[in-house]
Length: 561
Image 1 (cartoon, rainbow, N blue to C red):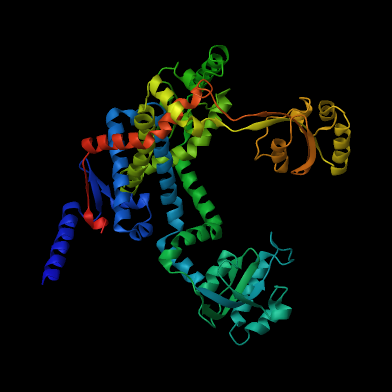
Image 2: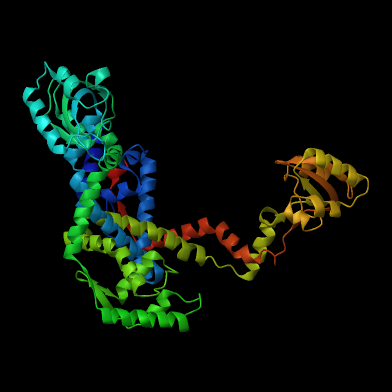
């Protein structure tokens, strides 16, 4: 009875949670909903469902924290200023344009029906035969014209049946392999044949013969001999792979649809310039670029800032090519250093480069994609993740500001870990390609010839050759046995040759440089960064607590059970 009551109470709590939130609401932060679609953009649904309750809770808490960061940065105005604003605008344009491309082009061909048909084809392997009536064309050099081939195909069609198929294949088929196989092409899977042939073959039932099917090779009569089922993954599991297969198989279809869509959008939104205003703008832009803003310290944005905000040089459909438009699409090219316009031609090329994206972006707005649930979910997740990195930079990392005394104390505490210089040895080296010559030079060096002169004359290591054999101080772990030997011999002693990669090294030890610490002055350039890195977790927790005070979060418990 107690177990029944416990189960009932638990069920009521789950149902209460669902009714309070709604099944598709994962959490609320500051009263704003986070939907399940957004959760599964953070982590794939299958992966989330395999998590333990504790892992699910941690994932949702992390997501809620990033939404808190977004709301905090929006309140502070940081998402609507500087390059952050342009980055977000660029993401919007690209996301909407890509979504419109998928809606107008991809989804019109790769429909759910087409997806299932493609999957069904992958489930089977077929055995087919054919009769080919070829004609002169790009794929063959047959003497027969297309009209003659079509007439012959009609003649064959009138006489063809299951009983005489192979006899007619031997008599009429232009497939060179007919003499060996009487038109039988054997077993094949989807992708083995051109589209038109495959489409017709997979629609047949065993024993059935198609009418004439035209491909670049000619007219085919196709007979399905047998069909057998293959072992494949379930439809839902294969869906991502099906999309890739479709792109490869139907590339021509996608290209033709793309051309059709862009032609239509171009007619609806032609590029129209005000030549007088465009010429005046470019003339002044180039003059400013050459005479005022000629230094590399200035950018195209600095030049644009000189122009009045009312500048408009043309239209793409109803979209004005104005100062704001030019600024935005230069930002898409580069947030910091976009190219400068050198003449009218370069400006027109810039517009043409972005015209397809502009047309798709406008199409997305006209279709209401920016108001769709899918887009809003993507936008919310993008902003939350972007905000997380910005918050970490501006309100965690850059909020760690120790005074000089704290930095000195930090230096003393970590110098043995971060700023330690291990012992090294200064050597003169002659590095050679040939082991026999290396042995000869070792003998000469030990007989008294100057290592400095030998290195200058023969060494293949440029830094040593140009510095009388002196190379940067060697660590014990460098250069294999040569590094170990440098520590074991005495000052002035000569040793070798040691194998170093493909070369042979002769060394003379100059001196041992004992271990030491980099001075405070030497590490001052990185000291603050190191200090901040060491205190990041502590500061993150402090700032996280601050966000939790400002923005309350409620989690739908049904998602963490």
